[in-house]
Image (cartoon, rainbow over all chains, first blue to last red; front, side, top):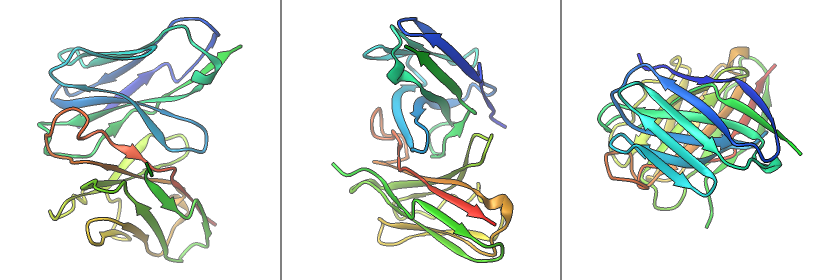
Length: 114
Length: 119
């Protein structure tokens, strides 16, 4: 059974710092991996999607990497800002792609202090 | 353009009552997903629809839960005889497609959720 773990559960950093969020999954047979952010009381916003054949994806100050064989992904946030404060969720889509649902970690709650 | 919308945003009900939660996906999206997020828990998959195919119901926690998708668009999640453990935020998502279709086609876009409280 696929399990997704995110470490740390919470992180507080001063504004301007670069930071890394970690995600690990137990079954390397994934179709893709997606990072989301969730603001309090709101739905999820997709940040980056990495296909199983890719190693990384970048969008602005965000960079996500994927090492499928070791079951790890990282989300790197450069020059953090208070507006980055949110819960960041990692999710994998299992198998060969025929299974559509995502399996989520419990998230990392990020707080960026001004 | 319009994103995924859900209604109601909040629902308070008494134990034993039935509730219906609605999801309007992004226009043109063929795949629709329901998840729930309980306090302190991660998001849990419930059910998903892909076009005219039979839905994948493998995540539904009991037979009190059911969902329909009419006309390939709007979906309703029904919980019968609600229990206190059903209290959660129910999230709906849609994507252009769910089968292997390449980057961007299976990105899931989420609605704001319905917060269900069962007293």
